[in-house]
Length: 222
Image 1 (cartoon, helix red, strand yellow):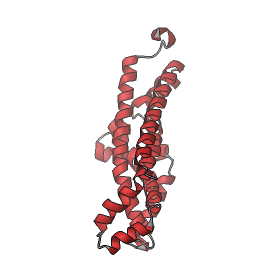
Image 2: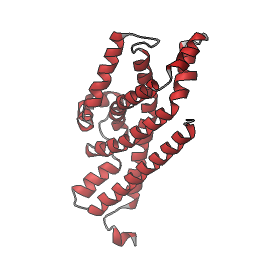
Image 3: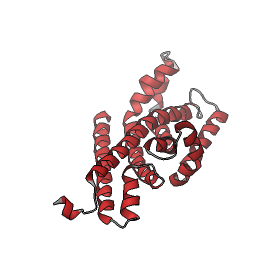
Image 4: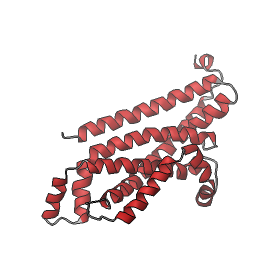
């Protein structure tokens, strides 16, 4: 039945491409969450009126984040090819896509982290400081717990964007469903391959959205 509906689809190849997309997405989302959280925290804490207020340092971090957020992802991949080759040893394949994916997504998420931290009631922060809480205690016992729903919501949005990034990375040989949709579907005019790859990508996006929304609702105590 499936063979009649999708005559050009090689299901083993689709399975391999799905695995590559899931691999790139999972590693990138994890690395983006960690790196973006650190960048967002530093950006927030060095801002005006916060614990580590430093206008110069804050300006540098903000500028770096804004620059990398502004570069179209497909161009970023090309710009980072020498860097990717230096650290991975190759510019083709799923592993080779990871540096560009992480560098492209982390600044985007860092801004979301900063926005989430700004929503934390300053009264709660000041109360913790007045009771002698240090920077580490304020970060891990006040800022992160209080902003956790926003952080999860932000990584959900970022994760969905990352799925789109992996599809674009496929055009330059990163593998995955984007690579299959472009090389086999578009270039060979096999629309059934493009359709199947697109449906699987949509399913992955819906699953990420459902998981993110569910976790956010459970963490939100408002």
